[in-house]
Amino acid sequence: MENNSLKSKVLNGMFWKLLEQTGYQGIQFVVALVLARLMTPREYGTISLITIFITIANTFVQSGFATALIQKDEIHEEDYSSVFWLSMLLALLCYIVLLVAAPWIAIYYHTPVLTELIRVMGLVLFPGAVISIQTARISRKLQFRKLFQATMIAVLLSGVISIMLAFRGFGVWAMAAQQMIYYFALMASLFLFTRWFPKLLLEMGRIRVLFSFGWKILVSGLIDTIWQNIYGLVIGKKYSSAELGVYNRGEQFPKILTGSLTAAVQSVMLPAYARKQKEPETLRRMCRRSIQFSAFIVFPMMAGLIAVARPLVLLLLTEKWIDAAPYLALLCLGYALLPMDSINLQLMNAMGRSDLFLRLEIIKKALGILVLVLSLPFGIMPMLIMKIVDEYLCLIINALPNGKLIGYGPAAQLRDLLPAAVCAALMGAGAWAVQLLKWSPLWTLMLQIPVGVVLYLFFSFLFNRASFDYTYGLILKYIQR
Image 1 (cartoon, rainbow, N blue to C red):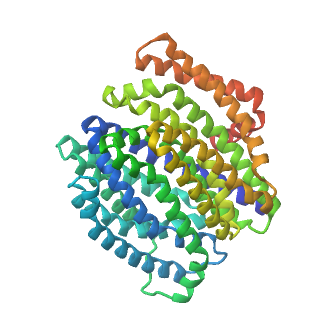
Image 2: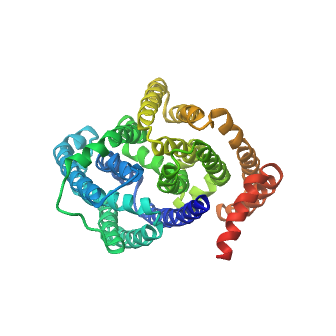
């Protein structure tokens, strides 16, 4: 009975988290399309550079303690309040660093406007610190409907205002305003929906207990965030902000699609796994089902994007962004693995093995840096090809510890991924062949999409029946509700 109750809560949480992420990413995508038509690749590259530094600082402020709040068996209001005030202090320290470093960053990248932009956009660190605590409370209770409501308010408000500013010619400041408004609106909305406010206390005893687990997550998060953005930093410096803008446009498509599912996995599965952290057999079943379901959903998305890359860019972004199409297609191969990586890592965190999490991050990033250094002299495309190879090696590395922890290692996981990979590849080939008709981008896409859907369902029915039936059952369940 307890397992059924947890399963119901997990599925309900996954539904709302997916809805929240899909809605957020979808609205952000539409806003980004409008802004891309109004701005140049160079302007987009400038904001991309700022976003990298803000993201790294935000990771320092938010990672570690928020995860510890979710993983801890028992939690009290004193824990939330203590972490809140410590996070605000960290946000202040990080903002001071950005304030001082901003001119040097602008000089390094030969972009003077970066100074003021970094100093203004750095203010999002403060609402970001608050949001991390609010989200931890929601995650522990699996109340993701509240997060969905707050996110929709914030993303709609920030999107509308940024578009209005872009039409009025504010350029990069329109995108900066979007980020600022989103963070502050999300924080305010979460206060409204959760009705939680911190107490005026900071108990170091509780901080020490959370820190013993959280510091490893913090270091791991910093390493991973820096690594995830290192290619943008390298491209922005070695080539140009315009080239970085094109690269980010190509990356945006697969990142949006996989980001939604990955965020749902991270938010929902960590508290779900944590509740069963002392039951390896139950965790193995949960992990296997999560990986099979994620592959069934993500692999066809990425294969489809590869197939439609060129007509999609031409239709949505116009000819001036066509150089983003090859990046889009190539990066899909790497982003397809993100949900599976997240599932493996969240399981380790749920079992309290943040030491393994940190060790794996160090190993993977050392390997990644070696790959980057060796491929750097050969240009952007060879760099990205080797990056994809590294991503597949990292999937194996992430799965290795779970072979011992729950009896579900790399070989078993790869076997479970294979049916979805084969079906997606066959579907992608069929959808890509539509381009041979040489129709306009609009008509090509209108035919590619239904062809891809029909082919994937057909091949899945034949070669991946278990995942097909499971997903069909989930859809029926929510329709009947």
